[in-house]
Amino acid sequence: MAPETVTVTVTSSIGEGANLTVSDAMRQILDVFELLTAAGGKQGSDIAWQLVSVSMNSPLQVTARAVAARPEVAVREIAIREKALVAEGLSSIISGSEVPEWMTKPIRERAKQLFQRNVDRIGRTDFRLGDSSIISFEQGPARRAIALFERYERYLADKEGDLSRKEYGSIEAVILDATTFRTHPAINIREWTTGVTAKCVFTDDVSESIGKSHTWGEAWKRKRVLLSGEITYGRSGEISHIFADHIERIDPGPVKYEDVADPDYTGGLSVSDFIYAQREQERG
Image (cartoon, rainbow, N blue to C red):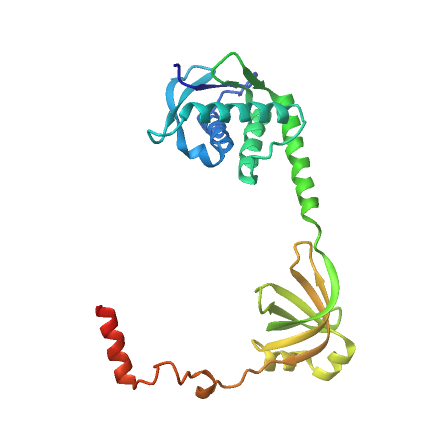
């Protein structure tokens, strides 16, 4: 039974200074086989595409055949499925219809780069999938494909949702330094749980209570505080800034031995007996 093969042909653009570069041609070839592997999903790594022939004359042409990574792998079934998914996916993309679900974001970026080279420097790319079927695209279809990818990324961004909002609440933060915002005293903070940096602006009442910003900033720098007020979140859901109407210093104080000590840790043994028992246990 004949092996499953794929042939990729890369033709340079027509016109002065349009010679095909090694970098563009090889990246175009590599991206095609990355698409094939990605289409295989979890079984994509079960086969490899082995080089059969290379024609360095213009146009550049590379033929590869599917081989099993392990003896028990059903290489033909996987290769046929990969080729079918890539053929269907590329045809759909070129027509401006839809992006296949198996294309993750990194693979979509590779595919977009493949089409972008056809817009910029490569004249035509042809895929022969081992039989009479050939998928070809030039600059026009490549532009449609890129436009489709861009629409798809915008769709995904909208689908994920805009998490920007305002709500009243409290956050714990570390004060980085003192600043001002439209003549109001303010501080740059690092949110305690996420590490996100943001700006905290004080209301007039809080401004009066804390006094001069530079003196206050020097005294409270690197201190942990509880801030309450109107919190503004950005699109990604991270804190953008807070208009605080209350600030409270968090002072955990010294840690006492009796607060952390476990009197039952040794199971009633003395320290020396406990250490001896542990060593005996480690020796088996």
